[in-house]
Image 1 (tube, one colour):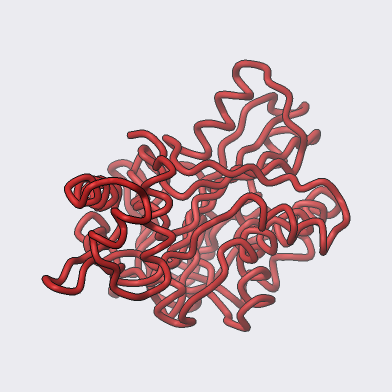
Image 2: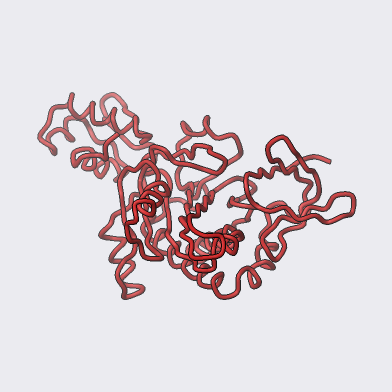
Length: 330
């Protein structure tokens, strides 16, 4: 699927004003037939854009889309930080994480703090090989590159710092307090709001490269929910319309600050705060990896970012990898 051409983008801009627009009016604006408009609308619907039609009134978006604009990103960044904007925008991409990993593998030069955002991913990825639902314009698809000289082993607790950065950004912008689910999820009102995917390349004890992916639900269409196997929510359900450009800038700043903190002191100054935000604090949970399962009471994380599980009065630590954590019953 190609990125939307200028006609589709013009249609989106017209519909994004929140009013019905007739096919004839759109055709006159773009110099094409109503039949051509109908084809463009169908193509946008295939991309996940929630457009409906009412006879005699025309087309309308089911909700306004919080679209990204490269020029606005650049302006917002330079107004706040007076430096070159590190954020790169794509309309459609297979996966923001995959693109940055490809650049690393082909030895393209990347600077720490380089960000890639997109309106749609055709092959978005979550943890454990799962697909990440990525309809056009609905959510935030975001990846951040960081070089870490202490090595892959020292980076194993990084998702803890990233989760706190997401908390920082959302609390700073909107005053909401999300919860963090070990190891990589962000919850709001006990429903999944965002996920984190950290990918590493490099040496165990030498310089390594990290690509930090964040997928954050903003106005997820109900049509995508049939592919999601857990309770979820989005920002628009709690906040109404948001400026996704502002969110990208704030998230980038918050992530940069948490990574600088991690580089200096590791998790030592983050563990207590993470434990306060623990979505499953004191809950009975089930840890699963492959064919094995452990059940116990979730007690938070240790100084290395491992999950602390109390079983029969004994506290055990579990670390990252292909582990799934869900609430369980005693």
